[in-house]
Image (tube, rainbow, N blue to C red; front, top):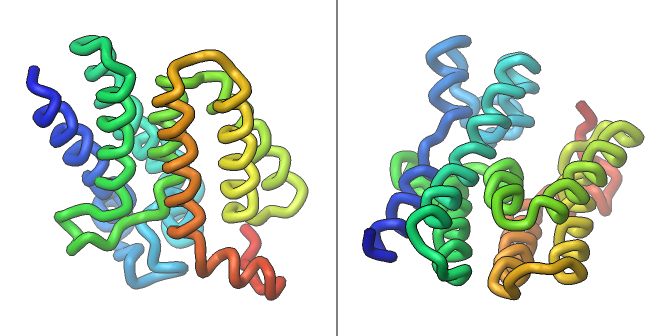
Amino acid sequence: MPAALLILLGYLSGSVPYGALLARWIKGVDVRQAGSGNIGATNVARVAGRGLGVVVLLLDAAKGALPVCLSRCLASDPRLHAAVGLAAFLGHVFPVWLRFRGGKGVATAFGVIAVLQPWAALAGFAAYALVFAIFRVSSLGSLVGGSAALAVSFLGPGPRAYSFLTAALFAMMLFTHRANIRRLLGRAEARL
């Protein structure tokens, strides 16, 4: 399968807005008009219930993991695997179906990293869980988790292309969380 097609499939997989679709189909709620306005699992949990939020979290992670798994099965080039993972992340953040206004990409990035660098993903998840348990602030957990995943990514074994992908995903997560960071600095970020 041509590399360009794998990258396109990565983007299309990432672009499926599960949060917006499921919240509307199951709860009759447009998450883009409620809560934070985000299509991701945290906002879905906030406005449509925790159970649905967990389902969206798993689906958003899967839409990052599955195209990367496919690329690893069909090609041996780590740079291609990284490109497919990046495309899936960008699909979530900039979905063509929602006029390029998507989510923040945390779960999708987790799915990508879980396939390529499981130890980094585990470190990120553990850091997120710990920070969220203490502070009940998902954005803070996401940022700390992303930092932990990035550190383990560069310290552990594996192709450097995967580490550079993790760095790029974390940099983009800082961008997608810029409003959250401002609220965190102003001690105004909402708790769950």
